[in-house]
Length: 229
Image (cartoon, rainbow, N blue to C red; front, top):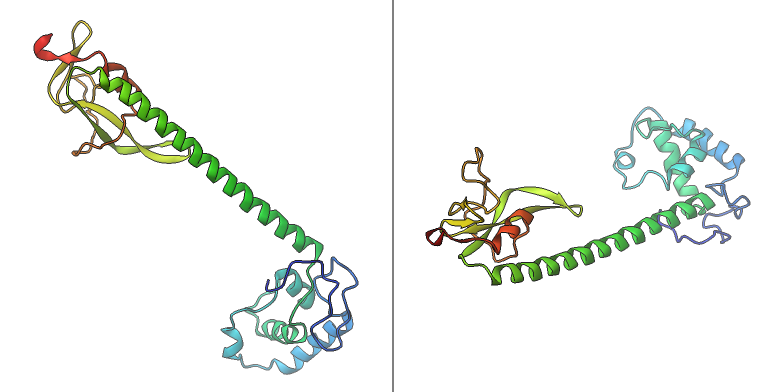
C-alpha cells in the first residue's frame, strides 16, 4: 500500500486535508472534497484518453480507498472518467490513512506467513528424521544380506509427506531365492514375483540411497543365492 502500518493519527500529507476522524474510513478526504473531485473529473476528463495515465504503475492506493472515492465497489479502471477521477484523487491524497480493517488484514497476512514458515520447518524436520531412520534401517538390513544388491528408483513418483518422491527398491544383481522356493529375478525388485504381468519401471542406474520399499526390505535378510537354493 506504500504506507507504514501503524494506526494513523498522523499529520495529513495533502494541503488542507483534515486528520482522520473515523479509523474505519479509508480516506481523509471529506465528502465535500470527494464531490468536488467527481465534479472536476466530469469537467476535465474529456473524450480523449491520456496514455500516460493508462500506463501508470499504480491507479489507486487500495480498493477500499478507490471505492470511497468513486462511490462504488464495482468501479472499473477501464472507464476513462473513473480512471481520471482516481488520478486526481491520488494527487489530492498522496498517502491515505490505514484503517482498522487494513491493519487486521496485514496482521492476518503476517500470521499466515509465520504459520507457513513453521509448517515448512516442521516438514523439513520430519523429512530429515525419516531419512535418518531409513538410512539406519537400510544399514541393518543390508549388513546381513547374502546376495549383492543395488537400490533403484521407480520411474513413477508417489506423494509422501506432502511431497512427491520416487519409491526406492532393492534389486539383486544375480538371481536369488527366499523361503522354500520364491525366486527373485536379477534386475527386478525383490518385491516382484517372476511372473508379474507388468514389471515395475525402474530407472537404469542404481542410487546411493537407502531402499524405501517396505516389501523389498522384508526380503533383504531372507534372500540367498539361487545357486545355493
